[in-house]
Image (cartoon, rainbow, N blue to C red; front, top):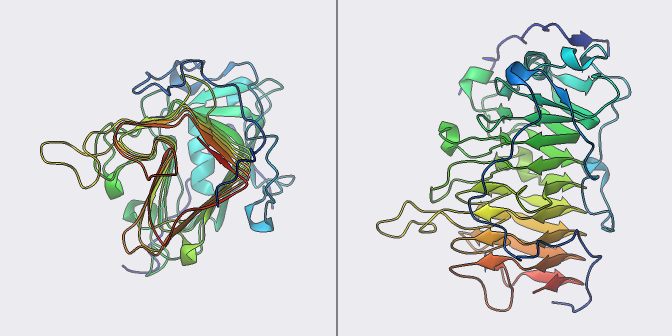
Length: 392
């Protein structure tokens, strides 16, 4: 690939203001109330979005705070929220009507620290186009909803996309799969009803967010009712799909919720919440519930099947990578094939899975799991490391 092929940032649209700039019986803290059925619900239909056609927002009720408030995992500095007190640009002029899909698309393309000014009430903005990061526009792209903004795919499209190897978004180095920029951060925001069904670039997946390359983290955010293709041996990530990160650094997911209630979980062939190939994850003080992997035939796909169905909440495949879950609750997820909670396959058996001060329970796998680790299918370096956590 050629360096220096990045395009210019998109101009600001109306409504975007710019400014200078070992298994333990000791349980972790309890999570949210369980679904009385104890089943995540394969194939739950997307919920409706409280947003008018054309991306004009409507007021909505504020939901519960994201993440596991009882989680006590330490958050490293590199996983913390970004200070957005001096934003580069602001979506909206203080009124709900000014916070449109076009304004969000333009702000993300221009990059920098992005906040919202949409009035005092929580609102949902239905995206009429996917917001796409322009790789040459800004070294950092921060999307901060202030705890009041929901971006919705309307059950029709992916919400946010960053791909350093996509020529259409501009090449900035000769090594697109291992570069330190852009750094994408989403914080204090909700992603709802995203749908990447039919997306084919780099294998698809990522109903709410797709990322390849650069750096990425999620802080104090919520993901509900997101979708991607229902079949595919290695396709996944109803909420988030990640391929490649700079220097193989982990994707941090901090104080965030995926699903959270019956009917709000993500649904995809694999990875009802998170999915990746060769990417490490550190999930801290978060909640992943009621997500489902609905594919059929696993990976590699059994003869006569389309494949998929693994990792009700988390699907991690590839070679050298780690998954560390701490201070988190993973429950009531479901996989048609293996790993009702977590599917972890390190092809060269170098990867490791660690669970610390977490609760995994009532995660159903209809096909296979690793003996002694309910809800988990694991092929990696040694056994999973389980510290002060409950698995049942």
